[in-house]
Length: 251
Image (cartoon, rainbow, N blue to C red; front, side):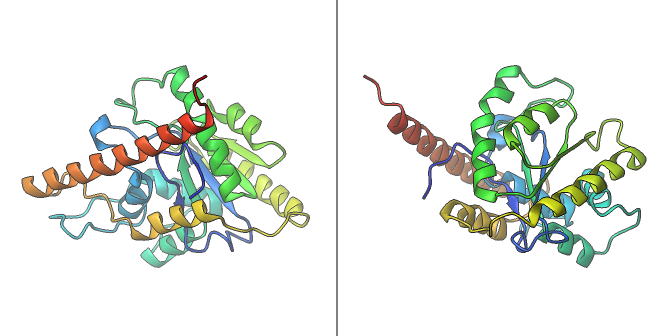
């Protein structure tokens, strides 16, 4: 498999290659929050399935409530204000990719990430760009917008407020709509998308991951799940370190 420094695999919808209105759109937010013990490679698709789609983990005693973060994103991209059925949610999230830029958990959402955390995540994002080859980025973070623009090169980047921070449809929707129009104009000259082995690895991770159960597990199941997460995260981190050592051997 191709080398990568990505710790948290992106969500890749089953129809991402076909895209949303013919565009491969990469939705970029900031970070996952929580203690380091909860880090695992499939955290992003797990959260999309639970909090965007409202799906339930098979061992959970109940399911988590859908989160407005994802509803706002869905409404803004489609430029609509309405309630969505499960089918509509499924169709939308199947057509896009979603990625949190920071490749480490932030313990408290009230504390700003360190500059080093942003810097350490750049190489992973560059890798995501090369694998997903998006036609359009929608960055839901004003403070990360310039960084995304610099890494995206000539590709269109719509930068809007995060759904939890001064987010209004009247400001956000026109920006996204204008960039969709721009991306459609540029796409006419783009080359055909071809997924590599890493793309299909992340694609399979999206398809096979289970919705996060949150705290709705028995004590035994919580212990087992934490051990599984720790094992998978440790294995990936070791692989990343091995690849880095091969690329930068000591003299």
